[in-house]
Amino acid sequence: MSWSREISGCGLAGIISRKRELIPGEDIVTSIVHQEERGNQLGAGYAGYGIYPQFPDCYALHIMYDDPHARKNTEEYIKDCFVVEHFEGIPTRRVPSIVDRPIFYRYFVVPVELPGEEVNPDDYVMTVVMEINDKIDGAFVISSGKNMGVFKGVGGPAEIAEFFRIDEYKAHQWIAHTRFPTNTPGWWGGAHPFTLLDWAVVHNGEISSYGINRRYLEMFGYKCTLMTDTEVVAYLVDLLVRRHRLPLKLAANVLAAPFWKDIDRMEEKKRRLFTALRMVYGSALLNGPFAILVAWNGGMMGLNDRIKLRPLVVAVDGDRVYMASEESAIRAACPHPSRVWAPKAGEPVIVPFDDSKDAWEVKGCQIL
Image (cartoon, rainbow, N blue to C red; front, side, top):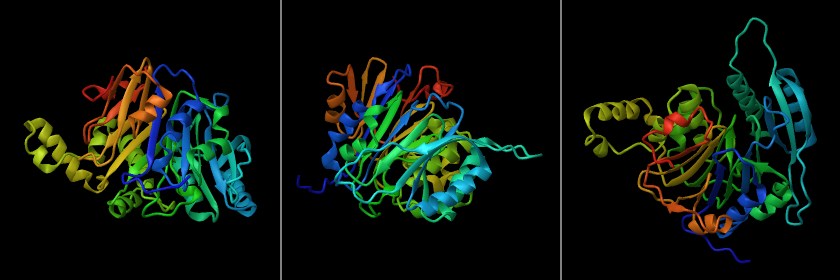
């Protein structure tokens, strides 16, 4: 197959069952492989939620190692920080085109109790993840949430799916990505999704505000080490929603904030709110063209930049919601959806699970 550059680059796909019914891995593979020409075989990946029901209360650390020495050093550190309930190599298949591959392991862990200290478990895990990625040479945590995991690497979406045996998993939601690197290298840790805790992000576009976003995040203890601009999106969502407790819709309006000229036209109460958000969180604004999918244990969100420079399409079929860069990718997995539309620029589409504690946040937002 010959490859030519796709001007809008990269491909996204997401499927969620609002009733938490399990979706075979083949469905998300079908959708993202249909967009294979949007990538150039230098990166692809998948995130599945609900794939580890046997360890529902454990943080599942998926870690990529360059060599056995990195694994040894990391495991010594993990044993000091966590109670390890179970660990194993992540099952893979031999794929002829994948010849230079890292070592992949997964660890199901619970934070140790620190005498005399009350520590938020999520903050504790975040700190450990940042330390591993920053301080241990050749080790990278690629996911760290509960009952979820990320599988990604250098290759096309079909190759990465075969390599990680995605067809053997079932999840109540999936997101996937095929990559066309532009300003950053095509390497295993730089493939999407990017994660922290149970947040997972896939992105099409370029974050031209990466430098400002990165410096802002560093003030809160985040360390950007994976050499790809999308990393800041996952950390910003964690900061805004988990740590600063903004409703997801407001967080989306920080990332893709309205223009000042539009804020000036709002009625007074709304104008004051959006003015405050722009002033407080100006360094969290994402500049540049982007379409992103954000998944977490409460649901999924799709979001475009403020002038919609990258494509994003949404469809519904029963309790399932599909998102992708192209309508054809949705129809490849769901031939006859009941509704299909393209969200407006900067308008989040938030899809909570029916039983999610986050469902109340989406009132007034574009949702089904």
